[in-house]
Length: 143
Image 1 (cartoon, rainbow, N blue to C red):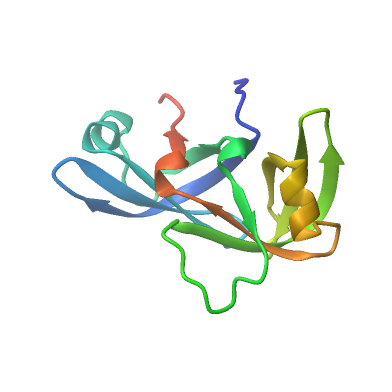
Image 2 (spheres, helix red, strand yellow):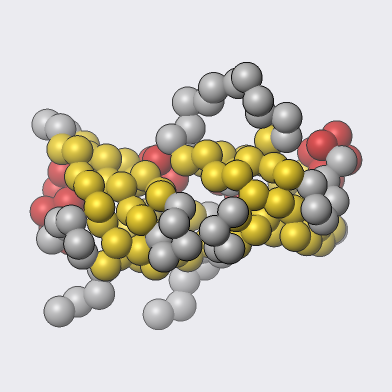
């Protein structure tokens, strides 16, 4: 499968909290991090999601925000993954920032040059990658 999302994570469903319209799905990555996806009830049933099922989680890099100095702050984003900047690559319009998470997984963020400069992003700097649960798409392999 080829897909345009830069962030692709393989994991296992560990919990599903269902509601009348939507559901939250917790996905455990092999590296120990947990992602939360907010999807419709129809998708839960259409994909046959259940605890223990292997899934792929996709997050487009422009939907990932980066924050420094987060101590004492709370955010509405369900996904808050601590890591360290491993690479900053400036492009013509934006910059691509790679973050190595505590468990070893990598996540990419596409942010402005101004944000790179304002946050003084450089390899080795601790950051938190933030993205909403609704920004996570899930896929399963056909049986």
